[in-house]
Length: 327
Image (cartoon, rainbow, N blue to C red; front, side, top):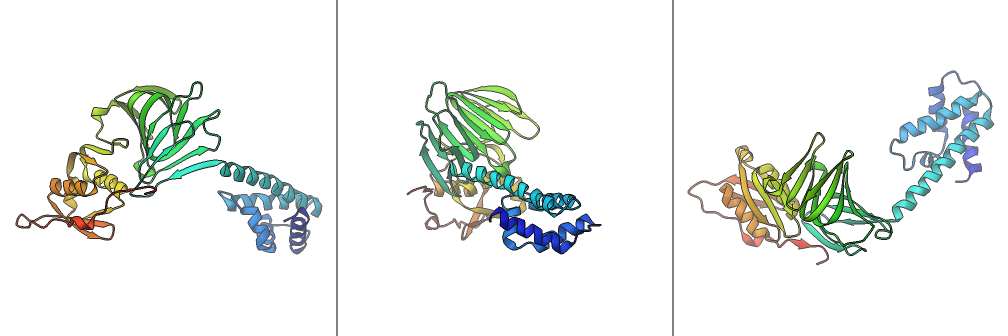
């Protein structure tokens, strides 16, 4: 839509409301109702809080109404021009990003332009600039991934997850930052990394990990972690971990949703290492450790405490191997 067309929309709206405006809020509503759908779309497109933005724009037109229609029209056009520039920058930047995504029960192995190998766990998003590897090696992660970072002198590799930034000092490491976990975890398998949490820098060596929550950041030996995933080696490690946490992790890896027929099961804790590539073995282990039967309905598994006289086991032909992306 051209400036002339926008001006005509505002001009018509101001003619409708009249020259005397005793109630600014009423005029905002009248201006908005007088504009066609196309103009409304331009005024609100791409705004996180469209209502507030519309209110501010029309408010500016109202404030200039007392000095004449031309001033009100130019006020709205000027704001629309600024907004148009903002959209252009946002769209351009989005087209320059590369995004890798995995779904539930999906894993993906990728090699970045600098030679870094990345294994994405299920329900993960990795975002990087199309110029990655030239002057900058920063990636943004939501979910969980293992990184085997290639050396690039003078260009550090950085992983950003919310308020945690991890800079590689030559290493293999893992990062977990699922939104529903409310925590970020960095695990170093070899070499070193430097993490920055709210401005505070910490160096982690091989065999160390850091758990970051909204209130604290704690560095612990890997052997003390109650739960973590070794994505590179395909293991889910749990130590004295409550069942809901285990079922959430297993469900994410295999695309299942678990429910229990007896809520007392949720208080159980397990110490177990599960192989992510062995779906059947993983479910068999859970069944044996909890002494339950499993009932399948689509991707929903119901766990029921087993009666001692029952020997019913789940059917192995109901299970499918874990799916690798691209296979």
